[in-house]
Length: 550
Image (cartoon, rainbow, N blue to C red; front, side, top):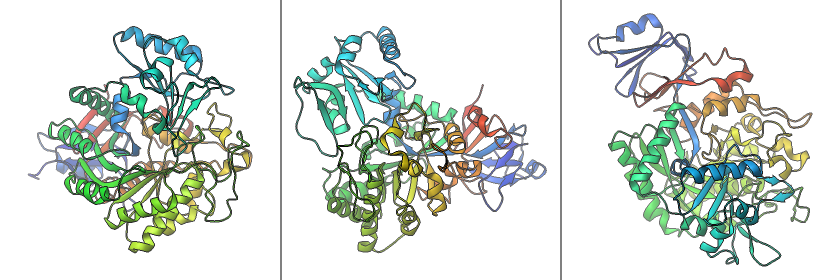
């Protein structure tokens, strides 16, 4: 054969996620395409004098992982902040902040990322007074791991003009005020703390490029070859396209156009649709819009059908009727959302909508159904992002409406007794409806998995381990855990389907894009409880080796 492969994997246990040919012992790549999937004997014909041969030694070869819910720029910039993901006590928080200050003594503002709720304790919320005791001179802002709550010291509140509060806010956003008439330092939802973040100097273009390249290197080490970004505009898409031109983009990026309540209807046709038309490359492509319907349970901003058990004064409504959305303030009212999504649907744009609460999920599904009735049904593949709670009446509607469930395994506490405060926000009798992956799958929904990085770690192996190892929160509850094959498919084939790319990637099949990940083990031979320890040995994106374990 004169037309030899550039790269050959041999002696692998390839799980192709292709129902027609689920397993193979060898794979060959030429350029950026897979050209052979088969047995070790036949792949020899593809080997030439310049072919790079990788002996898989019986380890698993998978399609490259696709993270279906991601914030690439935010995560990249956050890598330069105080890392608080492992902090569990006030003393540990102080140690982390002081160490960061010692390493970077000249920063005018200090920002931390990834702080969990419940510090110092669930009964004693973190306030500016706690933060003043850690750092009183320089402004200090800490973001919760879900980026729906911020805590600020007095200096930061004064600099942002928020110490005495601010204007009325919508969508559950709140600058929490104290009995002394001053802000406590707790701020719920982005609308409440965007003025704080606007005060923090952002890196210049050179600095952003350095941080993003650093993040891409990190993602390559985890086997991530595609991400569905959840925030964006044409400027951000152009940034990634420039990285592609420089040969520095090592993950494909699907970019949306971000929509807020203040976004005019005309922007969909004047900005979102042209962005889709401009960015249709193999590494960077657009064609979606992103909405928020509610906040999160942790900050009491999710729209929930059955109220919050630890806030008995919270309004509750019956959730038996399809028209009842429960308690909590939605970000879009019914008419506004229906009008916006109907126009986006008319323009052929895919729609992503953040909805954590079961009331928000119902509201989004109603909006999508209204768009179908107005525009006629098409293969739109609109998506609901998160779905932390689902009412049984709404689970079948995903398949009925052709809506995709985009969910994140690492968001779910492994057990109800976990230190995560999430279970305390939901009535115990409703726990069985939380993070209900099995319910959704059994109802026929297409499920795509992701991380929501930097909210959770962007490691798909950890996500797979969480999906297969989750335990029932109460005796008699459904664990909602997935089989290993289902979890892998949700990070590959089904995630590709969720961005209309199932004919190009997500499976190891001849003619598809050469996005591949070689693991350090045969993951199917590893005990279920040890899957999280499996690592990535090599990552290939667009036919190019972008990571190789040392």
